[in-house]
Amino acid sequence: MKFFVPIALLSVLVSCQQKVTVENSEIKEGKTVQEEPTKPEATEFYEPVPPKITVGENGMPSDAIILFNGSDFDEWVSARDSTAVQWHLNEDGSMTVKDKAGDIQTKRNFGSVQLHIEWKSPAEIQGEGQSRGNSGVFLQSRYEVQVLDNNDNKTYVNGQVGSIYKQSVPLAMASRPSGEWNTYDILFHAPEFDESGTKTRSGTITVLHNGVLIQDHVEIEGTTEYIGWPKNKAHGPAPIKLQDHQDNSRVSYRNIWVREL
Image 1 (cartoon, rainbow, N blue to C red):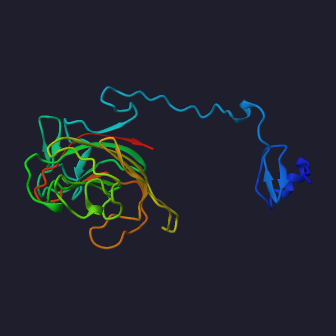
Image 2: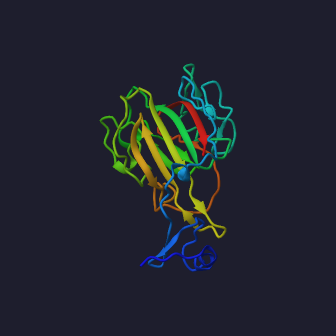
Image 3: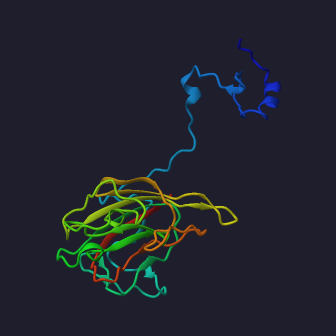
């Protein structure tokens, strides 16, 4: 038999059960159950109103932060010592890794982001395995999405192009031919830590490679280590970093922008 509880008494009961704020709730098997709405407006709301974003012809949203448009390195510094970037700035609006010049990173720190970045390996094939067109995009300087020329070039699959390095194998290999431009669109949700430094929520990464979903909301185990297990030392917002693999990889980048989430 069903029975209904007055609202005054219900406010006492819910302290021991699930809290509800809707009238005409009934207690059923020790749990509060809300009656189903009978009018459409009962499930409609009008706030918050999403901000209006326009998208340019180049596909960049109006609220994006431009990190590299081909004209200068104003948003970047050497990751080694925060000095000026020594990579090559090209006439076609791209930049190319200068061998042994070191990684570069953004001057700004970022948390969760939507990142758009375009890259290409050189058309002239040199090296094999991890020594061919190797670079990487590091979120918060710690979590790498691998850049690599994998065209007719076998390597370990958790280190191939589009992998979350040493952690997650991509769902597909969607690279364009060597020497042609590739696009990564990355959704990154940063990990969270409590005051004691304990990780309370893992970060996640989603990657579209040339429009193809290759990493689907993958939970990051920790830092993407070359040797050893992932580490989870507490941290906050940090730069986006691009890798100089220091083997004459000659990887180029262009059209880099980010939206803070």
